[in-house]
Length: 489
Image 1 (tube, one colour):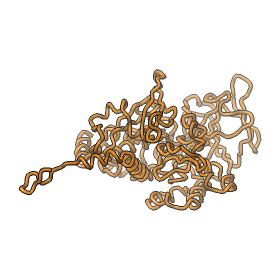
Image 2 (cartoon, one colour; image 1 turned 90 degrees about the vertical axis):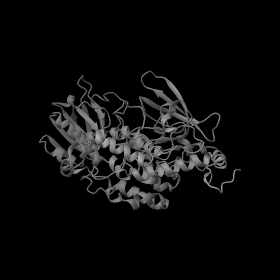
Image 3 (cartoon, helix red, strand yellow; image 1 turned 180 degrees about the horizontal axis):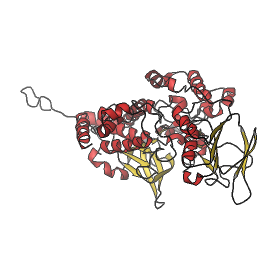
Image 4 (cartoon, helix red, strand yellow; image 1 turned 45 degrees about the vertical axis):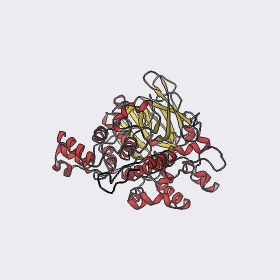
């Protein structure tokens, strides 16, 4: 690894990384440690795979007045050590993304350096925690600095320069200290729930803030201590990857039985999103007319993604595992005794469990996030671009933000004087209806980062045209000074 790190340092220097700052920009790469107290060009919220990749790309382009913050502790950014419970990544091992096209930064190089080429050849898919460790190695080697334990609270136009700057409120989780940061652009790299929240089924007798949460009733994204499931009867609601992964964790922890309840008569069979994972789709989808984008993403969503066969086999290895198809849950409640068991009422009758996990994913709903609530009503959404019947037929798709070419929020057509929204960029799952899944899924990450970085560079340049104009006029590189034909002006 020392040899690889040395080779990488030479490769990055050969590529002139970090890129030199633009004319008129005072912050040099060596000054980045002091950026937190300065007026920023870009503030990135979230230091997972997407956030750190954007920071890496911006530094390549000579943008150094940037800052990356994450509410998690160092090493715990992203889902890899929390609610991601698969053994291996879903993606094939050969896919690249966070390396941004530099071979010595690829996962393959990182893995092969430690374990050898033979180990790479025999590797089936990438271990989830290996991927997490790789991302942190890559971050260190590229010099991306992250301020951990800091939570994004809100954003509004800057009081003194509302046309060019944002004012972002942050909170330090260790002591509750508040911090106001001025920036020209804000990138929300907040992951799967970055444009919404956990999706909860609607039950008459229990809501997500009701009793038993994180004791008897869990969401699949909750921090779950599966050791507490030993000898217990468990039910998981859902048919996707997280449903099977959580069921597997309960089984491996020694649950007495695990039932997977699925509303449909059969499991989803074909992963259509895999069939839309190629450069033409990734680069061309955004350019399609609205009607074609609306049809294509809703077709993929409606067919649904099957659970990975690895996760199914992981559960099927246990005799105490059972899949219950045609089980539509109608209500659930806690028993009144001290055990707080969970009663589930479905179209198949009454069921009693010690624990229930709701593997129902994430919804897209800007209003559901407290940190976005102050501007969410102003944002253009897909429901404003389709008919009322289409919006009713695909209600969640209609709630996705309708984004511009740089992943930026756009103000609704009937809203005036809110162009500051264009300085906020949704580089998370909320971009899927407008750009396809370019922020979060490994296959499209590089295209997404490239598109966002190009947009940010262009807008930072045009914003400061007067300064760049002055710098160009003042530019005085006297090419012929050493020759007889030099004219001193």
